[in-house]
Every structure is written in structure tokens, then in C-alpha cells.
Amino acid sequence: MARKPIIVGNWKMNKTIAEATAFIQACDANAHDGADFGVATSYLALNEANKLAKNLIVAAENCHFEESGAFTGEVSVPMLKEIGITHCIIGHSERREMFGDTDETVNKKAKKLIDNDMTPILCIGETEAQYDAGETEKVIREQLTGSLANLCANCVSNMVIAYEPIWAIGTGKSATKEDAQNCCAIVRDQVKVMYGDEAAEKVRIQYGGSVKPENIVEYMACPDIDGALIGGASLKEDSFNDIMSKVK
Ligand SMILES: O=C[C@H](O)COP(=O)(O)O
Image 1 (spheres, rainbow, N blue to C red):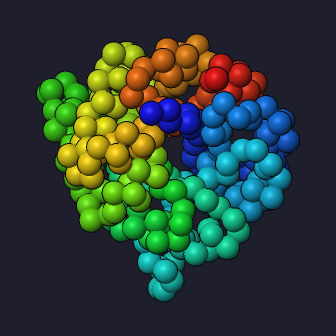
Image 2 (spheres, protein in one colour):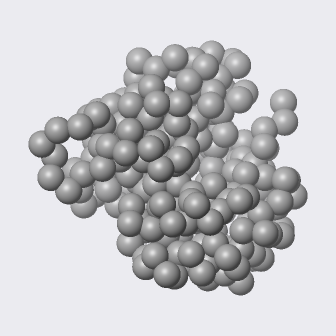
């Protein structure tokens, strides 16, 4: 089955509102129908960027799993929905490493997003030590078992899952296309184990980790890679435009 590619830039804690809107102005018209293209911005830039974007998806980088309450500094899914946000990254390795996200909290975030008809972009991936120890497949399956627990098959089929080996993030040391394909195939198989053939066929799986204009085409040629989650190379207009032009 043909899955529409999805390419998302994750800006992390970069770009002021002015920088974000300038980027949207420079890139929005180049987002073409061959794929879904988007950028994930800081909470502060979401509203302005989203109002400006006609073609790009403007995604959040995180959310809280509760509807509202005494959670100082947090942003709820209904708050994102109110300003028209449709996609949200959850479980990025930086949040897992530095801000205490776990498979359990990520699972709650996925549920809350799905309950609000939004699309989670669920990140998983192994550390360098786990990779070196040959534990990649075990880690991928465990993270998915926890993060995707107790959802419905149809819900999972509409999600995006980003496989990002942590050792490849921001290092310039990207996974080989064979390794990336192999791991994305494991992701798809785990979705099949948990939610059946149809969910596995439909779910879109991204590779992330030092993706750039020079290697996007080789990743996109892999049968189980439906897109990319891109950090550094999504920050410059030229580079993101270049990537969009190479994804058909
Ligand atoms: O979410 C994006 C990833 O962390 C990848 O970042 P990178 O493209 O800078 O390696």
C-alpha cells in the first residue's frame, strides 16, 4: 500500500517567533503534494507560525497528558488544539533523557492526543551503548510495547513513529540505510504484533538522526521508511527547501 511520506523538521529550542515566521514565509510555498511536510516549533512560536502556514504542518514538540491542572510550566493538548495544532512530537530522546519522559507518560500523551483527534509523532530509539551491545531490536520492541499500550488499531495506523538512534542525533553519524531500514522494519513488525496487519501497513515510520539533503533520497528509497524527523538540517531555509525538493 502507498503511504504518503511525512517529513518533519524538529527545531527543538531554536528560533524566536520572528525567526520561525520568516522561515515559514521562505519555505511554505515549496511544500508540495508529494509528501506531508512540517516543522515542530517552540510553544511560543506555534500560533504565529500556524496562522501563516498554508502548506506546512506546524507541530508541537511536546504536550502534557492531563487535560488541565496544577502542572506549572506545562501545556495541555486542548490548548494546542485550540490554536489549530494537529500534530505533536512525543517521547523525543531529549525529553526522555533530560525531562523524565518514560514509555508510560509517553503512552498517556499518545492517548490524550488521539482522544483530541490529533496525530502523535512518537519517537523511539536506542542509545549508543545499547547499539554496541546488540540490544537495538529489544529496545525498539520494549519502547513500542510501552508507548503504544492499550490504543486502538485504527488509532495506531494514523500515528507517525520516528525511529531515531540516539547516537545519530546531532552527531553527523547517521545510520546506514541498511540499519535504518532494518530498524524501521522492526518497528513495523512490532506494530503488527500489537495491532495487526492493517495498522502495520498504514502506520508511517520516519527515520531520524543526521538526515540532510545529501542523504534524504537514500533513506526515502527504503521500503519501510516513510519519512524523516530532521533536527539540524531543518533549521536553515535552504537546506529544508532542498530536502523538500528531493522528496517526491
Ligand atoms: O528530532 C530530530 C532528531 O533529534 C534528529 O536531529 P538531527 O537531524 O540534528 O540529528
